[in-house]
Length: 486
Ligand code: GLC
Image (tube, rainbow, N blue to C red; front, side):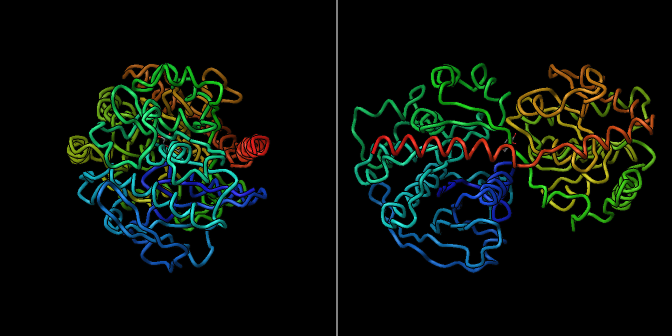
């Protein structure tokens, strides 16, 4: 079974968040389970991509209104990722040092043209290269949401109309919507089909993907449910399309995330020596930052944005300090400038209580998973969340708001002492979050219980195997259905 995954991100070539991790690992595990899966992303001007050798497999031209842009499709020469990786090389739109924004954090202003070009380049390749045609085409997030619509409704792509499509939503907050004034950029399609592109008087790629793909998935069952009640205006659509929608929880790449072998951490886990492994890695963090190794370390890793609840952290840290509790906090990430200012100020004022590194740093992230005691995830929205799973694997106990995938993966230690994996709170509320942190600090004092919980979460199976079975089953059903239609 031949599958093509189309995405804006794929680790290690291009990653800004969880989408990159998933598209960089799911294909590898699908292939280990016997499929023939490849991935295509745009060719960004990023370090990893620049350092590799690429072989041109297709040359074409994309037309956006009157503008003709030549492009190539290129294949990574050395197959080192566990799947073939293709890139669409459209230099005018993607040869830049960021995925969505420049290094100063300014978003690129030509998003509409960028994602249209990428989608049209992929389709042009597929109609011209019979060997590239997959049995199932799997699109991810709004950047690729128009592909199923184009396949079904644009004359030039009609040869692809019978290929089953899957559309996966990793983030329902971003729709990629734009004004109908941009319609002239799209390839011609029958007037009667306009409704498939429309949501609230805009062209809405996320909504279009949901309407036109054969199947829609999102990255946890909990989040699938939430989308019907809270998806920035798309609630009725998810209700209407519910029969083709399914939640499939993400897995993590246990080969990349392995505390016994991870080259990014200093002290590896050896046998049963969990406490020593945690303490030694925490000391490493204390060498670089102002934290006190004797106190429990709570860490936040991720984008400093509203969705992730990063704005609650300053108040939470202050509340813990005011209550005279023994703890340290650390924040790693980038995002809202006002939060950068606040965290910088706090790290000066709260010596040995709060420190921060305001950057995207994959290596430091691994070290923090290994050396922290607790991971904070006060998310407002969390479709799946991978950090809580990385955290468990490295013996760091999650403190989470019970939403989306966090609700599905982290049962509460107070409610279920024998099977819990972390501390949960329900409302986005400072008092509730504080109670969860308080309970975590209490657990930290009981070394025996702490080790028991660490051992349990480290042994939890968050691997891709189970979810890969569900994806394979779904692909299989679609291929069967497409053959009936032939
Ligand atoms: C997005 C979501 C995150 C999810 C990831 C991978 O980044 O915000 O919750 O884990 O996609 O699906």
